[in-house]
Length: 272
Image 1 (cartoon, rainbow, N blue to C red):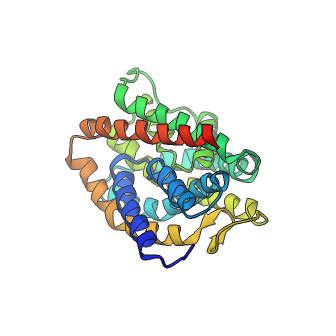
Image 2 (image 1 turned 60 degrees about the horizontal axis):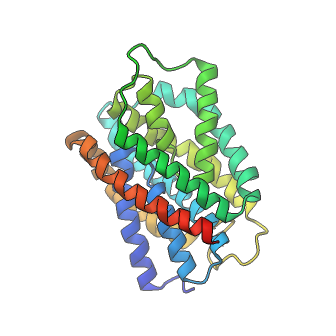
């Protein structure tokens, strides 16, 4: 495929603008939106379906490094970030990410990763729709509990290429962290999640055959550069919207979109 195809660049730029806005708005890192579309874009350009899924997951995760920084700065200015929670979860996140990206990710077929992605996107959409109230006495766990939760967040994020918001936001809100603080803190957690997983994807994909031109390990650099450049423009707008708009209503609408994307990845996984 041509790395400078204008149509390809336009597709990736539009995807980046949408993903950046959603990262700032909902703290999800944009991965749930990016993975199905990157996978479809690569498949349409001749990349084998199994490899396209893996590259989509890895490339989506790489863009979160940039999106996270942009949205975190906006949330930090509003005083919504809980840095104590970021520090408590990060050690486990790094461990879980290493287990996923260096081990399980390389061993699983892309079809299985597509099915896992579909399952967790459905889980996230259902969480958004239900909006369950947490028990009023529940609080954040201690150090061991936060390390355990961080390991789960980093591991599952590494398998599906998302920033962890689909787990970390429900986890924090169940521990009675205010929703705006949970979204902001989830955006900050996206950085260690993405950085640790990306290193694993690059190392695990060094000897993979049939990678398209412009790839570093499992990461497709043209998509990374275009999407990241576009997403940092809209992530601050999404963070502003998270504080100014009725997020509950927006979550319901986004949940419907997630179900459609999950259905696409389910079809891709079953047909691969």
